Image 1 (tube, rainbow, N blue to C red):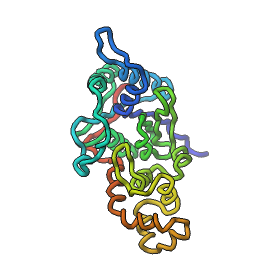
Image 2: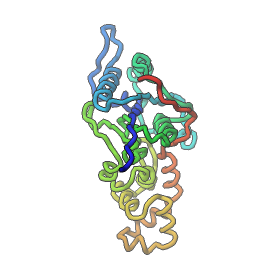
Image 3: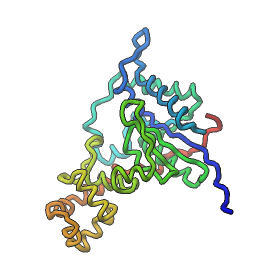
Image 4: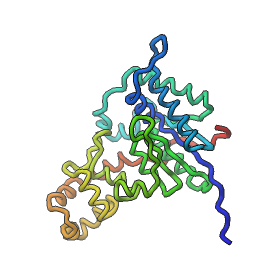
Length: 276
């Protein structure tokens, strides 16, 4: 008789900034009788109640960005340079959102020099040996999909507004992109990411990047094969113009992949909350 499967506990990691930003732009400009803005805070509370109801987590943890520059800004001055500065009403609600998690008894994690995505990645890394834990990342940011790992790490993301959600396992990521979650950083290395001002290789778009990764693998594998046998790419239907772009853009591709890769070594030590 096969051994019984160990019961799993569910850990939900909240990508707070992504949820706040989505709620702020999706909901009306709610405010108190004295004019204090509350729309994004309402959205976070609604999302939190929805998560508790639908996912029935055993543990919930909130992960934050900090206002200080991150290691990505240090490496690349133009990182996220195209983004408009957060409106004062949103900034005020980001600061006040800590009160929500305090009221719910939800612990908060952040680290100077790292983004919330890196905090999420680090918690995933530090809990990977705990086979009795299933982790669900709640976010409005598709970047977190690179952390998906089979059925062990899932991403619960907002499709539209704060009510239309989808739960991604590894199969769902492959169905959408055509390759495994771990290769999403390679994809951005080629295509770039305009939302974060990550350059990629100019002239290589989403379709070509996907074709290259599906046919040849990671960025490292692509360049290894390209240097060994250029004809292999031509035989796969890759046009000479794209081969030239790959050769000329190698440095940009690897640098962009580094910027797009979620770190798993942020300066935090994660412990499961005692009560949630």
